[in-house]
Every structure is written in C-alpha cells, then in structure tokens.
Image 1 (cartoon, rainbow, N blue to C red):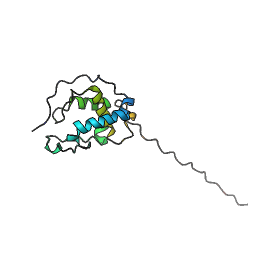
Image 2: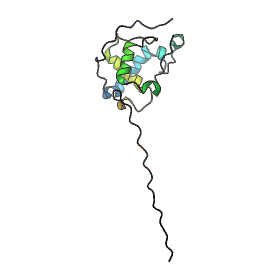
Image 3: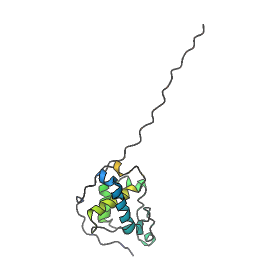
Image 4: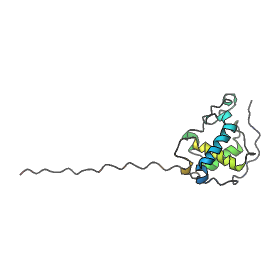
Amino acid sequence: MALACERPAPRPAGEVELTREALASPEVIDRGRTLFSHQCAVCHGDGRGNGPRAARLASRPADLTGPTWQRGLAPRDVYRIIRDGVPGTDMPSWTAMRPEDLAALTAFVLSLDGSPGVADIDAGAQPEPPPEPTPEPTREPTQETTP
C-alpha cells in the first residue's frame, strides 16, 4: 500500500530566494533540522532513508547524505522535490508548507552530505575542485669539477 499523498499541479518555484547566504545561515539550517525531524525523519531517518516507516513503503526513501543524490541537484531542484513530491514514489508533496520552511528544509538537506556547506553551492554549479598541489622546486644537478 503506497502512502503517497495526491499531488496537485506543480507551482512555479519563485516563492523564495534561495541565496547562498540564506542557505548557509546556521539559523536556517537549524530550523530545517527541526522541520526534518518532525516531518521527514519518519521515512528518511537520519537522512540515509532509514526511518522507521521506510521498510513499509513501496519505494525506498532517498539517501540524502551522499554525493550521488546531491551532486546533480541545485538548491532550486531540492526545493521543488520537497514542495511537489516525486510522482510514482512515496515522497509526498508539501505544498501546504510555508515557502520559508521549504527553504529551511532545503538548506538542511543540502547540509547532509558533509561537504563544506551550501555556501559553496550556487544554483546548479558544482563545487570548486581542490587546488592542485604545488610541486616541489627541482634542483639542477651541479657538475663538480676536479682541479
């Protein structure tokens, strides 16, 4: 038996600004953590799809902690998934949730992968790769001359 909610037609995602500053705010992430524990953890558990209801669902909840799920998703994508749900899965829509709360959940979900933080994520951009190591300077061999 699927537990998915009926989903209304998707709305435009223009209700809130998903700026780097807003998503990196510790207060916003903490608000998202609280919402997640009350609304999402029953299926997603600690973020790895291991909540107490997960085994009874027709489709396994997404593991939100790893880069496989997160790397291809911009903050706007995560926001839309939370707001509109995922058709054909047990992920319900949360269209009744305030846009500010959806943004806080987005910030918290994006913080689950353990990366340096959503402050480094720009809508759809990949995080900068680490800098190349600086090579050690090489010494030219010296020729010793014998008198």
